[in-house]
Length: 95
Image (cartoon, rainbow, N blue to C red; front, side, top):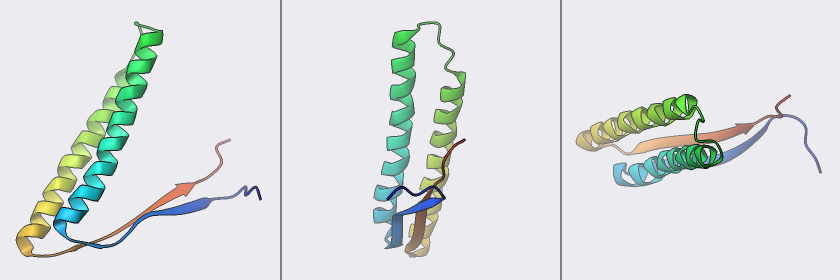
């Protein structure tokens, strides 16, 4: 059945040790970074004059978010706390 409205997918949900949280969340961010790097390379191969500023900016933003995440996880580890993570993907049709 085709659904037209907003759809959600529960990607990550649960309580994680700092080590587990790092493995899961850093891996997700790294995968997204690699996706954009591959896109940038593929576009550059098709057109060597391709302006990669937008992709570069997005990659840099993700790298920054990864560093923030690593700091949060390190702080929780120092406090001896686990992390409750709820990551939901929201998918809606683009017009």
